[in-house]
Image: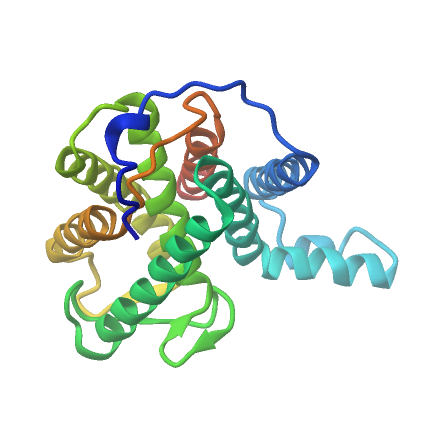
Length: 250
């Protein structure tokens, strides 16, 4: 994944933040879906609520489907915007290799975790977070990609001259804080996975930090961020955390 001769020399390069039409459509779709999710969450709209709206049958089924698959769709929209951002920052081939690496590694690690309890602790996934392949919902590795990739770009935007080790550790800390906020939403509110001990083991957070930092330290392309002021990494993480808070404190 490393690009020889293209290390830190390019860091800090600034270019105007111009998006193409695909970038714009993908990010607007993410924002719209996030806004709908916030409205439905804060207004306590459920399939039972919709049954009293007297909507046409087709529209009622569509809204129910959105409610049932809202979070997996949100992850996929976040993934699309994140990957398009990575393509813009590096190039299509490099972004594709990074995406495949993170998705396969995270799926393998999560499968190991669900089967053995290592490295996160004893837990199992439910069917509430989309279709399951083996022991892990297909949305989980895409969620890993979203968090790790955006954390990496946030660090590169804020501290373009950080050493590779510092970059990995700070990004790993961002990923861990994200998981700290995510856990109550995913386990208590949505029941996407269940801990055998009924509470989150501290080992989970240690593993999140170590794994995300190692993924970035070992595999992240050394080609630096070309558009430091592109807001997508910050906004994607912010709005997803906002969804978690809305769900936890509604």
